[in-house]
Amino acid sequence: MKKFDKERLLLAVAGPALALVAAILLTSVVLIASGKSPIEPYRLMIEQAGYSDVQVLIINQASMYYIAALAVALGFRMNLFNIGVDGQYRLGAMMTAVVGAHVALPAALQVPLLLLVGALTGAMWAGIAGVLKVTRGVSEVVATIMLNSIATSLIGYLTLTDNWGVPLGDNVTTGVMKESGWVPGIDLGSDVGEIYGLVFLAIAMGIGYWFVLNRTRFGFDLRATGASETAAAASGVNAKRMVLTAMLISGAVAGISGLPLLLGDAHTYSLSFPAGLGFTAIGIALLGRNNPGGIALAALLWAFLDKASPALDYATPEPYEKEIATIMQGLIVFAVVISYEVVRTWGLRRQQKRVGEELAAAAAQNTKKEVAV
Image (tube, rainbow, N blue to C red; front, side, top):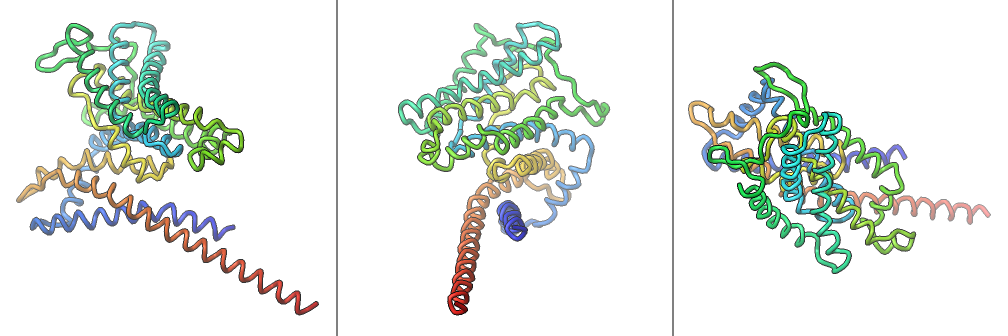
């Protein structure tokens, strides 16, 4: 049993490790091909990440990545590909900002209300794809991709000045939210910045994700349905209901993923609100292998690459393109798919070999007993 646990840990670590090594090597090849040092960019980014203000930015960004990646991972555990996390996240943030700008309650009620609005909006938007899948067999991949596009157009319409849009220079916002909905963070000084208060919500959601999936009947049913709908149905699980429930929960989590920034810093939704978070979360969930701890490390790595890469613009004597970090992120996703398949194949071979050895040992033992008799 102890040996099995060691192999299990090795398999869990080998995939991400191989992906990171492969991404670094491939990025280094690109740098060498362009006539630049393959080591200097990493040194510059690590040096940049040593500053306290950059560390705060990394933590804040990682909190948003983490929540969004949990939403993706929930779908993955059900064998569902919720590609619509980006639309659910942006629509949830926009509706939360609108409610926060027009409703004024005491902070003890305002903040939970805003969290609920974000979650319900994301769940509603993901639920459309869930209903289409269980009632008409529409692929959730196609449905959620189309819903991303529809969400973009819907946000554009709702933020028109005739609706909830408030002009601000060349930008359009939803208006500043009431202060009772602002979530205070940890202020580390004017030179360092403030850690979002909802960073702790991200941590709590990670713990909740682990507990529900591994310590509850619902989590078992969800994982069983993801592994085999036929087998789950044979044990009394309603597969269609589990699919719809998983999509709703995934969407609810996605709807909250933009709130650390919205409630902790921006206090309004505008055209400049970050886009693409949901697509980034897919790579983070893959790298973290849908494990809350692995996802946390992957989110920190992605945030590090985002926030430390500007240092490449100021390198001397010749600056590096900060797109190097983007190339590395893309290569990580590419390498993850390959490395996980390699590790999975190796693990299956190891398991088959071990079973064969055990069967051979049992057969030899039986032969000895027959001879003795």
